[in-house]
Length: 149
Image (cartoon, rainbow, N blue to C red; front, side, top):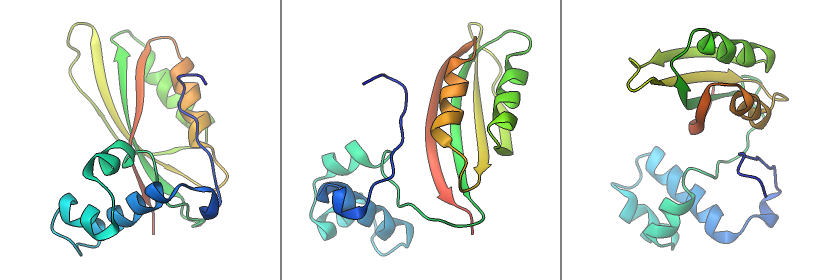
């Protein structure tokens, strides 16, 4: 396996039980049915370490017409034109930029936070691969994913 982020769509029956329980615990917390992570994991029957190990890597799949909102974190070299390349890759991937924030560069490296909307049929993994392939991109992380209602 490569170190590039890959994404898969699986039927629920193919997903290990611990991952399904992580999704359950996340839903309990999102709907404020529990006070904290400890209460959520106790309720679904998994350990806190399992929850923290997988919480950023499993999301329920939804086929909404509105798409999903993704928050990305990028570390980029502080050189002219790199942000422009990022925005071009987003446009070519069909992503709609919702918000963008760039920090002041420190040691010739800037941090960018992007919130984007992608519609069903568009590929988050392809967008991430395109970003990672750009000259001057040091790191790309998917921080959050939220269904747009």
